[in-house]
Amino acid sequence: MKVVIIGGVAGGATAAARIRRLDETAHIVMLERSGYISYANCGLPYFVGGEIVGEDALTLQTPASFFRRYRVDARVCHEAVAIDRAHKCVTVRDLEKGTTYSEPYDKLLLSPGATAVVPPAMRTADARVFTLRTVEDTLAIHAFLKAAAPRRAVVVGGGFIGLETAENLVRRGVHVTLIQLEAQVMPPLDADMAAFLHAELVRQGVDLRLSESCTAVEAGKTLTVRTDRGEYAADLLVVAAGVTPDTRLAKDAGLALGVKGSIAVDEHMRTSDPDIYAVGDAVEVRQFVTDERALVSLAGPANKQGRIAADNICGADSVYSGAQGTMVLRVFSLTAAATGINERAARAAGLEYDKVILSPASHATYYPGAQIMTMKVLFEKTTCRLLGAQIVGGEGTDKRIDVLATAMRAGMTAVQLKELDLAYAPPYSSAKDPVNMAGFMAENVVTGKVKQFGYAEEEALPRDGSVTLLDVRTPAEYARGHAPGFVNMPVDDLRGRLGEVPRGKAVYVMCQSGLRSYLACRILAQNGADCYNFTGGYRYYAAVKNGTPPARGTHPCGMDRE
View 1 (cartoon, one colour):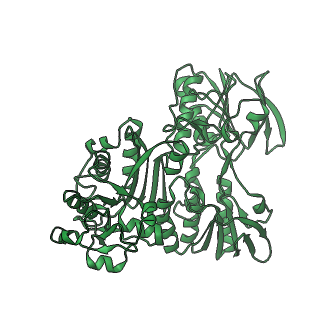
View 2 (cartoon, one colour):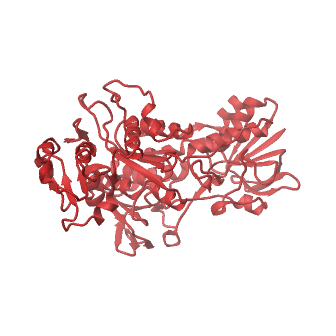
View 3 (cartoon, rainbow, N blue to C red):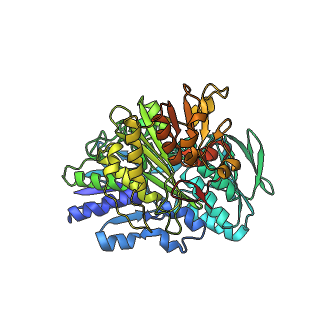
């Protein structure tokens, strides 16, 4: 059996190695149009910033090492330009020699990945304008930084690459203006969770420009980037406006296409041609939560798909069950992570959902160095099925998102999170792990022990005295900032001051993290009040409303510890 693989990196290289492990006699040819067959593309921005040192650190395999280990004929700078399905061959262009030839196959695997989107207004041949998608891109930016020592950079796009590039340019001493078309960075997060990243970017000196559309790039002694709201001078421009599936070969070959022009595949990663498979950023997959077809451009799914395609090419029956889109990203001192769907996606899918928002510490608060994280967990109202989770914080963020992603994959409900038996020692966690706490909170909501109101509802609350608004933090906390109309009544004084809470009016309660306001609601509810707890607490409110960077430490009661 001869297998031709178009594209290396995550999906293609993984498939090639797996095929060899399953079939020692297979003839495997891998074609890669760049100069690198297998590289750490997720590490590219960190090479720009100098955290990853040495070009060799980015290269996971070379054609020679891949052949020695797996006997794969890996050809770099070889571009597949056409697929002849009738005769089962690929037309290949040798980019170094400028010649073309035909490569026959028994089975063909497409792993072409995605290409960087460059909006028409950003298209220019100026050598100071870059994208960041390949090793070659990274080396070019790195060389430019070394040779030209730019002082000002504009980064267009606030997704993974845009944020990572902005951070690493700042680390190189470059002043960065980040322009994002949408009203928030990092679209997998909801706007309220992205607000924490906005505050961190500004705190680190990034000139963050949201809801701006780039209209032109003008070259002169310096670059001028024009938007619909202003203009910005730059010595360097990095366009990170997203990616699009590279499906020209598949389309020209007449293969069935899916969402956004991606390659349609079945659960075995097989295309509409039974002898052609496809994996990675170019294919549509099943979204695990909604069961809809989607694009998920992440390395983890691509690696899994490559393995599954290889299994099926070799006669096994492996199935790809869908992607949750689990992701994690560092933004300076913060970590942002998500799995499943966010609120926008839940609404678009017509799901009736509820949520809990909490601000737990990364480990026991009495042990030095505990850091607060903000967690949002979404679940279906009728079934308590986990729909998604988002976390922004410091240490421990990645651990918790992985636990939640695993629980979701296992079919656990939000309430069942309370039953997870998770590791505890003071340097690592708390006896009630943040994931357990999310389960406790979901149970309180589902069973009616607590009624919640959120950020959107707070803005709509009447301030005419028809409802009671209480802030149950300490007077010192209240004095540092509070939501309009909320009256201070510390939770520890509440039982002795119940007579000051008007009867017959709904009571809306807020504290710093949501813990003390929950305690206040339990006191008030058992004394006949119709009480609602603000989910997320004032630290969440201030970050979303005012862009205030929250404190990183906390006392056990939820009070900030600077």
